Length: 353
Image (cartoon, rainbow, N blue to C red; front, side, top):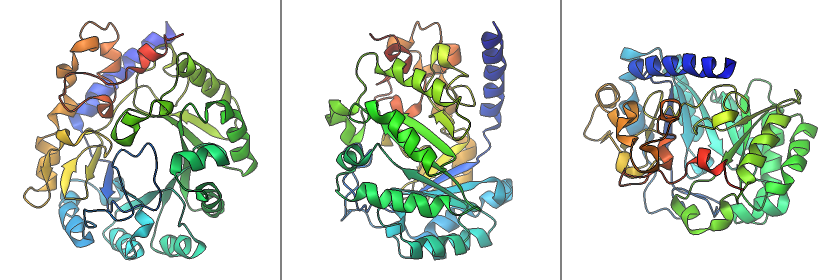
């Protein structure tokens, strides 16, 4: 009863937040160049990307109007890729963002994250880092496609964790290969005094659509939830499941908040070609404009209705679902390009045996 009441209160909160839709997190897909060959890449990034890096001045000019509507330090710019540290001008970009009052951080695989790069990014005002560690050595290297990716990621992690001024977390994409070593990975992180760990499942988008081994098998989703419930009792490290999908009975138990896909509500992105979207992981058919012909602030204020009004999602398996008022259609990245079917319903997977 208490959980139902809490869910009801949260649903009202979510409705109000959607009405306000204040931008607080903006992804910049600064490059599609990458130094790894990840099996689950949603963007099919490669070392020699066909798309050129998005010029920083174009990105900056697009976001400067945000200062008219928001306090710049209320918006975090999350620089992603590809692998953002491959941009040689990244420290200069960060410095300029700080000069205009924006906070910023990066999402990195850690492969080329050297002490020199770490120092230059800290000097440019970097405030946050998200680093991927997808299992112990063999599992991580398999998923990331290079033999030294684990050792280099661990080296980057130790640099990042040694900086008291940084907010950081480690993210792990859970799959069949690393599933049975999550407990060992948890101990590995705690031994290195890591303070925050987020676990994700993989959706069948990009390269992941071609590899069934990346998807959890029958019963494993429930086992994962039980593992996280137990891991959260260990106060040495804060463990959370990812933020988006509705989890039924596990709501309120595996993360700090209830299900709320904030794509297009609090989260926006500018993609490699200047396209304006929400979370970079959602299907490119959900693009709302382009900085080379549209004003980003106007697009943010007047579009994104697909994300803010989810009534169109009441189709297929969602049509008669009794939990739709709580789920609100799930995560945007779980919907296909035709907008007529959710690709993964985690609530259903929790019932698999």
